[in-house]
Length: 422
Image 1 (cartoon, rainbow, N blue to C red):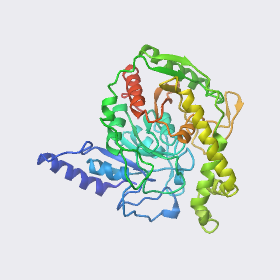
Image 2 (tube, helix red, strand yellow):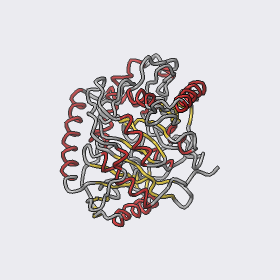
Image 3 (spheres, one colour):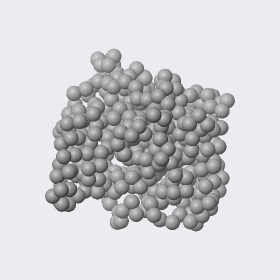
Image 4 (cartoon, rainbow, N blue to C red):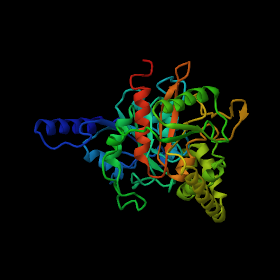
């Protein structure tokens, strides 16, 4: 949804402020798009659902308000899957979003509209949300930087329910520095979100100039349990090796963690059931059928099942925390496959192995459960010109280290000038 009139007014106000030499915000006059999950005062915000086809919020999401206050110009709202429940981008409200690198392929999701807009040149910044990989996956599929800050770094209120304790708001950009500049604007506590973290001294943009020589870096090709496409393994393995050239100590590892997919599915489906079950059956014909099935799955989760899963996530975090006492960073592919066909069918076989429903995205949702900072950066391109992402994961609250590593990698292996075919 293009907000042409709103953008023109904001751009004119930005121009007047410059001419009058008024104080300017950090993103003064910079055009950007907002995922349609982010409440935006005065603009229709649907969550990709017909249930909210006419919703016009009376208040901005905290991040949106901060972006406006910093002078950003909102070009429009971008597509997502209904309430962001799947890592693809098609919605009952607005249909299918295509990948600018190959319009027969998916851009990933659920922030695929934001990623496609930036990759296609419709503004330098897209703001997305990430509950299981929804910023990092489309960044990988569209050749962009997608940064998921630490949980709580960016306040989440107000907004649609269903992703409690898992969702992060973050930027999709062409460069790491652009992502850091956005984080400088949107990070910091707000009492509307009691989980939000206090602001830190210094600027995230400055972290992009930090030296990463001497960091201890772990590279895992598969987290010990994932099946990964050979093209992805080769490209990401070469990218990880580049960190040796940057002065880091790189070690190939198998963390030996159990796959937390079942825990993730249990928690999210239960939260979606609590959020949206009242819409069934009266309005289910208006909803994505796969979302309806997911909500019903959540109805079978008992309180004991849910709390047991939450307890196991706490134990999982302890394993991750103990592992990262040895390492500053953990590298891995962002996704197990390159972008795939725009037919709604997800890969169920990778490298000759049958995989689960989330088997194509095994590297992202674990770090929503733990809340660590993580970024996807372009690792390279396949022979047929499709982007592949490398994920850089940091210790708890070590957003600056992740940004520094991503910026150093970008300087060594620049991608800014690589654009989708016209």
